[in-house]
Image 1 (cartoon, rainbow, N blue to C red):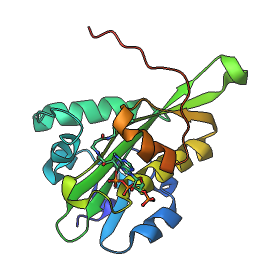
Image 2: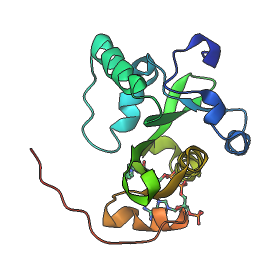
Image 3: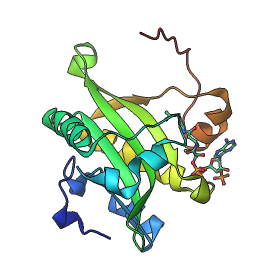
Length: 171
Ligand code: ACO
């Protein structure tokens, strides 16, 4: 596995909760997304969510740099298999600063994905727990997400409850 010290990471890795890393054990490593994670199967993992065509290395790096420039906003984490250096899980929390709630912060959980081969081993739960902890440490007063009906039991297991509806208009 490429050590974190040799990677360009999206955010300070000290925000990754050490207790969750301990739960994952030595075979899996939880860290912020790196600028060259396209090489480690990031798109393969995302493809369990929806069609995820590869970006060119330059487009990937440009997109990464754009997210990184928005300090304190984008927190994308990955779980890496330490023996293969491949990503087996990924998720993000995006922090939205409001004028409401005394300039409060809302976390939006997005793009939770676990490789088919390792689903059902609590990696999804660990990803959610880590994103929630990042949101809590950064000062969020709530964390919200949209999901399909079939994923409701998973998010209930993670401690979320149903509230309101999602609306969408595709452009
Ligand atoms: N139905 C019922 N229970 C479920 C389901 C389900 N579909 N999925 C997980 N659970 C339960 C598990 O049984 C487990 O319960 P337990 O603690 O009683 O044993 C608990 O939820 C935690 O499950 P994990 O093992 O952590 O789940 P996994 O690692 O497989 O990750 C995930 C779940 C992320 C939904 C995974 O199956 C996946 O990647 N699916 C395809 C992509 C997807 O739909 N992502 C979510 C999109 S929504 C969003 O991103 C906001």
